[in-house]
Length: 66
Image (cartoon, rainbow, N blue to C red; front, side, top):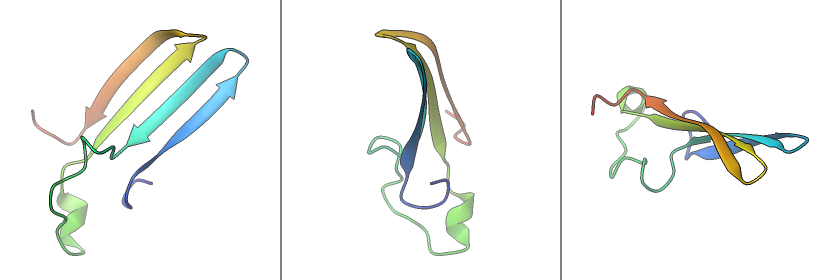
């Protein structure tokens, strides 16, 4: 997930769902550098906690400077 084409992880405990998402269509670089230089490309991760239908926590973090 971290260095591949992207993906997400969902963990459910009762009504609480935790989601870690990486490289959605919006976050993916337009061009990918060849290995090993692609490891230095910016990466963005999105973390959300849902309690039923409500978002209780949402954070975006990564290596982008913007």
